[in-house]
Length: 267
Image (cartoon, rainbow, N blue to C red; front, side, top):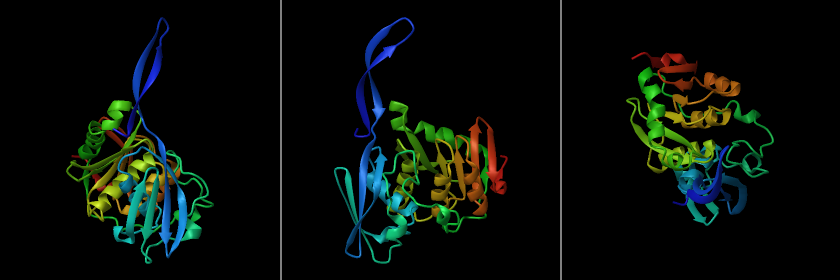
């Protein structure tokens, strides 16, 4: 698969040295160029794992606030490591706000921005205020995600994001070497498959809950975000401000709820 590459390695222990091969997750650049009102703009270079590039770009544009619906994308073409997107005139693209000044690494969701002040009070989709989630569904969601991480099973070097319904069923999954990319791919998949709002479905991610991931979650309207690891202080503040339930440190039957705990009930 394009997302995995075999490499030659040396395995060294205290008593021996041997030659072997290993499988690693591929990381390569994808530049994104936008055509908006007959002008072309470069909005950045994503460092990503190849595969589901169309979904990645759509999710990235959505997460950046450049589009709010898939109809804002008139045409999208990918040639090798370059993506060209033609936007509709009623899209939300603002060259001053959205054009980055540096490449976007697989570990950075805000690289190249002059300021994040305008992101702290973003307007996302209406979050479902009535849905409830059993603690058992939340704790099992990380296991459900892990069992479907094909790239991680081969390489041990990728992140994942999953769309889980309120009964605990995995609806969609996306993997990438970058955790931000995994969420972008997932949201891009949702939009491509006609899922314009998550409803009672929630987001589960394989790593920690950073501010950038919470931002993407709120933009799409997820009522609940579950992370295997810890959240940051800014992630908690943003989740609290937008009444999104943020769960972290899922370990066995134990979870930590950092905001809007009323959505979680003990089964």
